[in-house]
Length: 401
Image 1 (cartoon, rainbow, N blue to C red):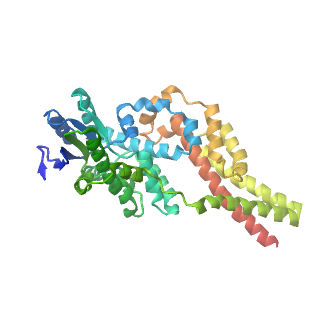
Image 2 (image 1 turned 180 degrees about the vertical axis):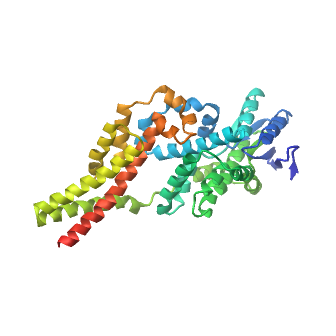
Image 3 (image 1 turned 90 degrees about the vertical axis):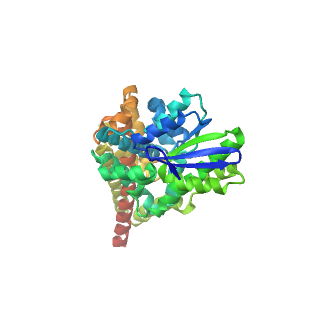
């Protein structure tokens, strides 16, 4: 291995008739950005590859693309949690920039700008972040997924300051791995989808570009944590890079039985109502009242904690007991729709979204992020209410037997 003047690790590989230079960078290092500039301006390369997917590229070069986001569509498609997690990570990086004067991703941005200046093809070789996050969640036991998400979200948005030791970790490895590993119970659960699979994916993308476009000299700007794995995969080669890409982009088929749990709970609750009314109308109505009060109250509390409009809080109370008996419609979907109707986000809210979410209070100030919180908190309140009320109903039936 040779090193640049800034001591960023570099590997030079020969793939078929092409030369690939792998530059290992620190995502929070100005020195890495300077090395990228020096190498590109040397004129030795015909193409520049960066560790970005199209969505991360868009977020880097055009942060205002969020202004085109259809928030209700995001919620209907079940992407609210994913968007919230992405905003939390972006907010985390924004705080790093403001606190330490470091611009996360500066070396990637510099590579993009200089590729355009020198009219070089820009290759986006990383896997889509949404697929990576979904494959990460799929590899975890179901009871850890919610812990991982809530731990990540609360830890990233609750801290006004980032510790210096976290910066050092970011200099050593991959920003996704470092961020998630702080909140996961088992780091090995994360290594394969966050690092190993992405090493394979980026190698496949580079091989695909070489074979399809015939680039003779490529500079690949990747995080230092990917250098070893990417080199190994490129040297090992792949018979069919496209097939490997399809394999790594596929999502594992969801397990059926977790989806059956809500329907089973609904069936048990309805059965409980039926048994209660059969024993006596008074008991039956008492059970229904318990269900409505507990489920509605906890969902309404969730909406209130997110500072929802008073009518949205009332909507949560009314909707949660009903939607909890229909797993295809969540309470959060109804409360989010109500909030969007009552307090529609302004264009300014979308433009200031990244800035606002870099502060704890900003999540409640901005109408976009607040709607996402209302969706999440009212959904969580309704889910807790379903199980609390269900156990209470079961206990009353057992006691009245």
